[in-house]
Structure formats: C-alpha cells, structure tokens
Length: 150
Image (tube, rainbow, N blue to C red; front, side):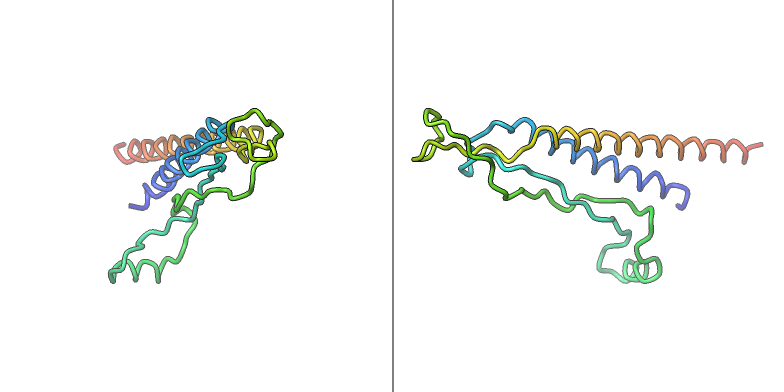
C-alpha cells in the first residue's frame, strides 16, 4: 500500500549500498594484487545503479502501471551490474618482481585507496540515511495506528 512505499524505497537503497560496500571492500583488499586469474593486475570494480521502476514486467498490468505512473520519485534504486574500470594501472620499476615485464616494470592495480575510502564513507552514510528513513517511517506508521485506536 501507499504507506509502505517509503520503506520499500529505503530498503532498496540499503541493499544497493550494501553491495556497493562489498565491491569497495574487494577493491581495497586487492589494491596490491598484481596477478589475477584473468591475467594482469587487478582492475577496480564499481556498481552501476539505476532507478527502480515498479511494474517492469511484460503483462498488461505492468504496462498500465508504467503508462499511468511513469517514473516517480520514491520507487527506489537497483544495482544493474558491476563493471570493471579498464584504465591501466601505474607501472612501477621493480625488475626483481615475478610479474615484471621484459623492461622490469610491474603493472600495479588501478585502485586508489584514498578514493576507495571516500567511496566507502559515502556508501556508509547513504546506508545510515536509508536506515534512518525506515525508522522514521515506522515511527509515523506506529503513531498513525495509535491515533486510529483512540
């Protein structure tokens, strides 16, 4: 119902930010990985989000919902994919390293720890904001029920 739309949107934000935090943690954990299964240095990954739209199926009801409501604020967000940053990592001269090329250079991961920590703080704050939104919506629903029973 309409009363729970805010909770639903905030819950989608919680799920999205948790995934984002997991991906950022993986980037930080692999900041020094010069050899992966795919070959080469680890490449930074990031989550791509898009607004969630209710009624995204192919049936008539979904079509009518999309036609009458379009994309409204409050529908939430969803993660659509995790992409890899294809930018090359910095080359460091280390001829004794097992992954050094013929010239003695090793490609390091394209992970910037400072940028990842900033992203982690941003994701954490967004998670907290969504959790606070759910708490506020629960409080409003509780007060509404309390007023209705008086």
